[in-house]
Length: 236
Image 1: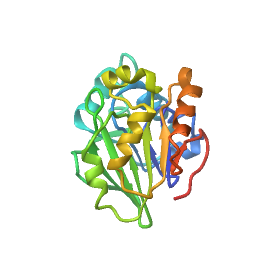
Image 2: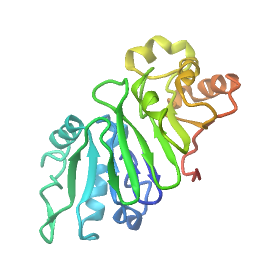
Image 3: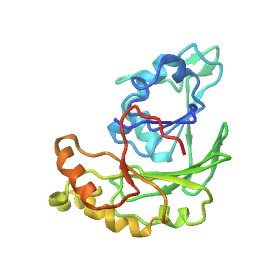
Image 4: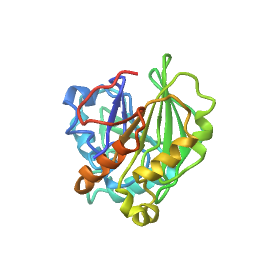
């Protein structure tokens, strides 16, 4: 259930948007950025909308590709699975504001700039380069071997971290390629495209293959790779 809180204001992904933050933290968000419509990245957006009702004067922006937002709207916020919080208002202001972003368009929320790049995953999926005045972060979301975001990263100053995925152990490479994910060996090949000397943080390891996959990541012998820990704060 993927969510990252950036600078205590921007939520990257909505998988654990409600259970991972206090009500006060949810109410203070400047926006939520979603990479794609798979459930582990959007599952708690309905509860987030419910939790912030009446606690803020402005709408909470939800930013993503147009067709991704349409899927979320039609499949979840459809008044059948969950109320449509893009229509439900507090003092005439909708609780949620779905705002589509185009590839390579830069959008600012508070003190953070967001630029999306298409990555190689099932359905429309964006990775993002996220920047504030001090540093930049590259987040691939779920992806198999990809290209555009690494070209975009080449011109980014102060890139301090890369967050990318590994899902399956090496013996399951065929499944990884079919579902457009990475194994440790595929990650190792992908690192040749990455800017050098930037720490690489791993998420999305399938729990049932966790020990096996972690051992294979460690066996790569890449000092700049670290597996992210749930609940931990990272300073760039």
